Image 1 (cartoon, rainbow, N blue to C red):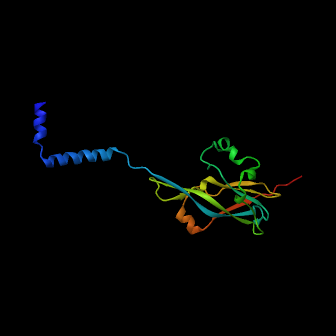
Image 2: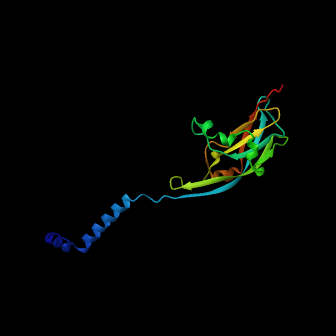
Length: 175
């Protein structure tokens, strides 16, 4: 023990500074980097064009709704997420997220998209893959389509000014 105390007392101030610097560097390397996340929302117009897929003609009076639902990531989609796309789908959609197509087959619905950024992706993105457009029209089969399959940077969406979603429906013969 006496040898250790003699050694410690012999260190100069410069040696102590070097040792302290090495210890601080090791601590800095071992502690994980600060992680952060932010969230918010962005309101954007969603322009849905509904058309007859066989004739390429607009469908007037089609009912359109924008709803939130999980993106499709795996083969278990229909099993896990059936409740989000149940019959009577329009009953669960806010009236402000619904509309009817005009004579050009279009309707514009303003929708608030959730946004987020994190230490791994610092540029804010809108979670557009979690948003779906549901469409029903008399004489046609209905459809539910993802607004986009991937999230998009909010700056890009602001430049675009709106999201466009074309949906083609096929006529259903009734007896």
